[in-house]
Amino acid sequence: MSVSKIVTSVVALALAAVLLYFSLRGIEWRDVWKLISGAKPGYLALTVSLATLALFLRAVRWRILLRSGGAVQVSTAFWATAVGYFGNNFLPARAGELARTLLISACCRLSNAYVLTTAMMERMVDAIALVMISAVVLWTLPAQPDWLARAVEPFGLLGACGVLFIALLPRLERFGKALLNRLPLPPAILAKLTSLLEHVLEGLRAFHDGRRLFGFLALTIVIWCIDAAVAIFGAHALGLTIPMPVAFLLIAGLGLGSALPSTPGYVGIYQFVAVSVLTPFGFSRTNAIAYILLAQALSYTLVAFWGSLGFWHYRRIAAIPRGVTP
Image (cartoon, rainbow, N blue to C red):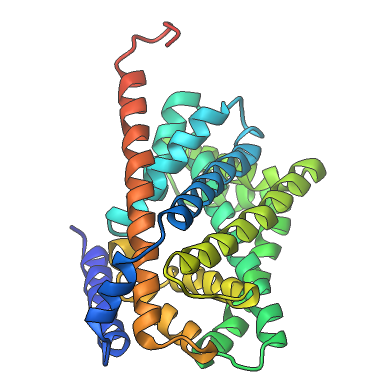
């Protein structure tokens, strides 16, 4: 393991421990168990169904970008997306992004650099959307979690930089190649770097098509609305009520919090976000922890189910000789 990975792991563990300490103080664990054990099956089923739909729509949205570089079936994008979420929930260092990149590249013969660029740009757009959601909700609500209100401004600045990055970088291809050609590198390495640059820029250009961009943004809005509904119905399963604006604020906090160095499954970060976001709106700390533990358990189960099927699917395809249709 490299030094950077060791440092990141130590920071993630330390952060998780500190956030868990502040989040779990004064929790009535008997009440937590009483709430979770009394969860209503109908609402749980609806929550899981909506979460599955959101996962599928994320795959459809990613496919919009991938198709700029070649043909990708919806099922292929879905299984790769499921594997990616499985990796992010159960493996360190967001390994799921690399896993889904390798699976798409292997099945669709797209370059790793191109696929990974589309995956990273998808995450960047999500971050921008979450910042916008946070800003609008914080502007309309009287009670505001201080940490999230302070985080919106720097995240907003990063989001603006991300938009400029997507818009301008592909237009600087000549400059980038000229800069590479001036480097004192062997021709073989220079050729590989030039090819890498071309694939990365191709991934960024996926956003430069008007129809493709419109479809991607429309699906982004639908996905985050479904995620808010998942939060609302998950709370109803415990007999709790999360208003729609608070649900949007919660999913924005969870999404922005997941950008921090974290343990697999975002342990500690999710507990802190739930307590800090929900308690200003009438939730007790005990109810907030009960809710987020249920939400994480449902997420782990859902992702483990679809992700495991995704791994099996790709192993089956890998076992088929090339040129044979599965």
